[in-house]
Image 1 (cartoon, helix red, strand yellow):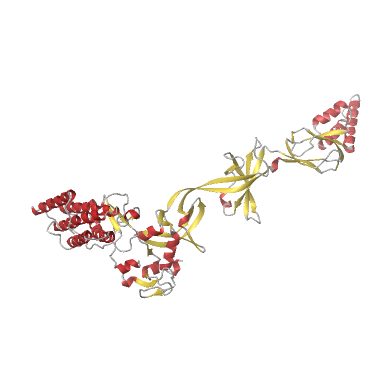
Image 2 (cartoon, rainbow, N blue to C red; image 1 turned 90 degrees about the horizontal axis):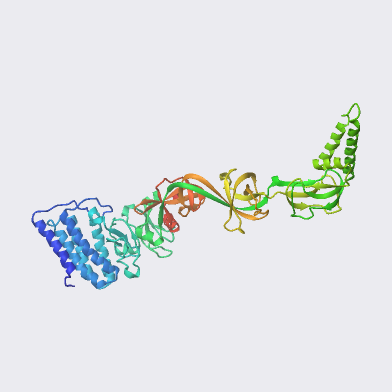
Length: 578
């Protein structure tokens, strides 16, 4: 199929003619060309200036083919392929056709381009373009002046033919899938594996030398092992080879295309500051040091009740109730008698003989919880009271009341319990594994569901030295000021403690696989090679785990697609790896 040459094509040909003319004037070179187009690695070198210029022109023609294929424009791609073939042959003629390697490689690429120019459908054109790319990529990779400004991509959907291509832009435009899947593909390296037959490509056989294969097995049924290629007797799928290296070391290879299909992502192991957040459910309780019981040391009967309801707020020294007690009445009379005797003794030769009686009677009243002002009032009036007001020993709220008006009371019986709520406790349940990280004095943040957006700061006041038998959790106590009485006993609260653990080596949680008591990750060794690696993990911080052993900083591990990678590893690795 022949096409008229366009103005851009004419410009490229003129450039190539100029290069050939320059060579005819005596400027020639014999560069060191890569040994073969299928080498996995390419030595860094520089072509002669003439060859480099000619290759740049050929790569321009290559791009004129790639771009139309990405846009599904077959006629334009076929038209440009003729110029690409001519450009490649002219490069081969520079310097009187560089002997052997480069010349043969370019000649083969030119034939592939000419085949592309004769393609009747876009599928055939794309397959021929893949062959051109397979032959040109190692040539361009050998010289950094050519490869430095270009990107190589691989399409995982290509099953028949070569799946890599070059383009100057980093914005992916897939020439193999066109507008159906323009963004399909992933940037990859410049390596080119050995070409396979169509049957091998269709069955996804790994590149391996015959002597390196240990056995063949089925992806779905790893128990099937054969010494010769074939199909699985259970599901009829093609058997895949397992190399001796994969069996003995656990190392296996997953190419870039397959990684793209199963969504594999990798993450570097890093050392960075770790702050662990511990969250727990707490409950507001009374501060036990601010609980006071009111009881009596003598028998009596309740008169008027001042604190007559639970929840009532009382102040220190405020009357709670009036009490009639024969014993207390008798003790008042004894005190008044001692005072009278003391007054009479002042006019005798022993004026202080009754002082001890007054002090003894006064002390007895004080021991029965009468205040000094009450005793002074009794001494002032010189008249005993039938009903003595019993006052509150502290300020707070009545949380328990065990008496009613007219009730008889016995010594030692609890009549009231009064709690101070200006300071309260939060008791929180902590998982057993997190208890070693908590110390007395650590700051804690408390929030309540009914007060959104408000946080209270407190400190851990105590870590209880036992576990709850049923929940297997430990309990901690957080002390908080409560001047506005916003925190009320029996409320539920959310407790959060932030613990600074310093710098730690961490790995994403998604990268870790659990194999019984063992913890494994897949270590990326480069060039598509992976190896299961046993590690020891420590504490969890967010979505990361601390690594105690098994990895070093900078190691790269698989962090997504582990399930399918694990299946691949079990298929190809030694049993000891799992």
